[in-house]
Picture 1 (tube, rainbow, N blue to C red):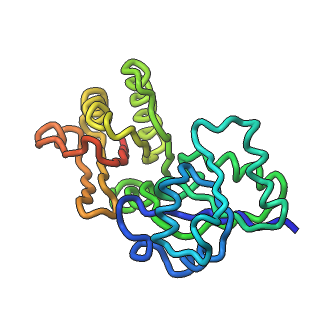
Picture 2 (cartoon, one colour; picture 1 turned 135 degrees about the vertical axis):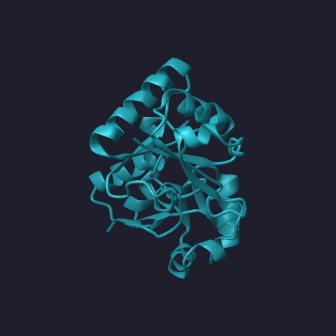
Picture 3 (cartoon, rainbow, N blue to C red; picture 1 turned 90 degrees about the vertical axis):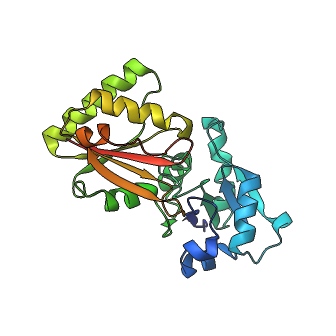
Length: 235
C-alpha cells in the first residue's frame, strides 16, 4: 500500500513553528522520515524547530524546486510507492500554491496516492481576509510579467476582468521589484480602483492597507522594498 503525501505549511517568516502551527500539524511532522523540500538546509532548520522523532541526519530529504526537471519528478514518488509517508515542504506558506510542489501533487493524484493538506498560514487568504475586497469572487494570478510593456498590459487586462466580474485580483511580486509594481499599478489603473497592499503578514511589521488609486497617490508610498507583499485590486 502506498504512503500518504502530507502537505506541510511553513511559517511566512522567522517565527517559531510551535508558535504559528497547530498542534496536529506538529504531531504529523514528528514521525515522518521522508520529505520533499525546496532547499535541504532551510528544511532541516524548520524540522529541527518544529520537532521530529528522527535524528536530523537520518531524515531522507529530496529537493524539488524551480531547477527540477520534469523527468526527475517520478523518482520523488518512490518512497510513497514503497509505503513511506512523505512530507512536502515549501520555503514559506502552503506547499503547492505558487510553488513547484504542485507538480508532485499532480503525479500523486494521478497514481491515486492519498494527499492530505494540513492547516497553516497562507499569505494569499490572509491578505484577502483583511482587504475588505470581494471575498466571494477572486482569482490568484501568481507573478505578473517583469517586462514593463507586458506587465502594463496584464494590469489593464486584470482590472478590466475585475470590473466585468466584480472579482478581486490577487498577485505577488519578487520582493525587490515590489516598488516598481506598486508604481505601475498607480500609473495604469483607474482612479476608482481599490488596491490592497499586504506586507509582512503574520510578522511583527505586518501591514494591510486598502485605498483607492486616487487615495494612494495622495499619501506616502508604503515601505515594501524587499519585504514579502501581496497585491489585491478590485475595480
